[in-house]
Image (tube, rainbow over all chains, first blue to last red; front, top):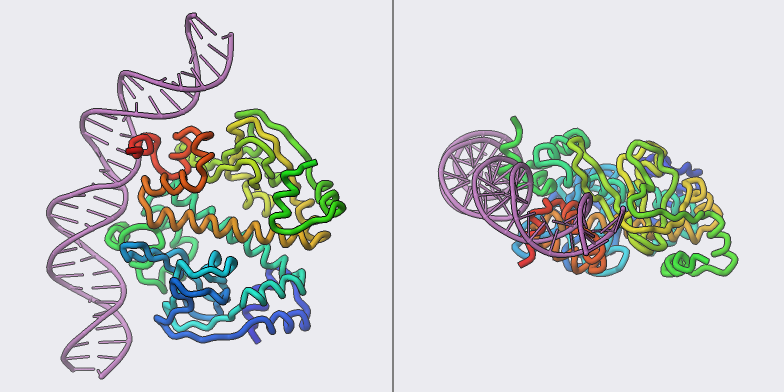
Length: 187
Length: 187
DNA sequence: TCCTTAGTGTGACTTAGCTCACTTTTTAAT
DNA sequence: ATTAAAAAGTGAGCTAAGTCACACTAAGGA
């Protein structure tokens, strides 16, 4: 049951059968179809999501209605509007399926319980958060030091599978470049 | 002793006298003069730093020798090259004083001990890491959705004191804009 | 199978921001 | 007070990337 989650956690902390069973009690499974929303801008953010299968995009829409992709999430990734989640405020981003997707859902309350009752899991989340921070910082550095083409090449290198699964227009939105510019980069 | 640190931690978790005394045993104090380096690119990163007074810049230098400011750190902020720190690899960034600066230094070993021996502190670091991640993500969104002028205005609003203390050329480096462009934004 | 829609490519033009070169102002150091 | 160094401003021209418009292709639903 939820073997992916177990492997994912055990990359950081080993778990006994009982411990993993206990961890599982905090999650619920949900399935969504392509184009469905897990989080809608302006609504409350109940869950943090762990992707079992499928693909999600986390999107910020500006006043002019332009969509910018803050992040993607595929198998084995966590995703949510974390500001809204942790502060229990309304979402400023939306989370939408690019493919049919199955996720494990974790209520903030259960996240806290898990941290309190199983120190190993707190350590797991701490490590995840640290690497999440480092990852974002790398993306900032990539943006500070590289032009559109270089950033696209870095992305291709870092997540080759993503390039196959996501339309280029969305990759452009993720890189902060227009669709047309990305289309002209290739040679 | 280190009253700032205590207040800083207690914004998140309350500590008894004994607990705080225990926490303190994990830190060492160091003082640096303006222009001194706490971390040099290519060297090992021993510490994570908590700034008691002064001002630091975390800088990434690209192949052409151009400096880009990844982050600033003033009183009450934590700073390090966290990738190098956590993975115990060589620094890819440098950390330099913009003013005379006093810091508390935390070895990775002591960070781990602190997390293991005092769950409250693990919770503290978890919360810090989560908000660090959220902060970086907001900077990414700001870059995805705003032009140079808007980003500068957001920065001014968010950290008014920083604008007073840091030369504009460095703010430009932080915003990913040339010195000259920043200079022309004001009206 | 046809038809609609999403995704992609490309030309023409515009613009934000870069670079280079020089000047002025501010700050720090002797 | 004098000088040097750092920081800031500004003009001129250049370029990466944006915008708008239209054409083409692939793919999913009735």
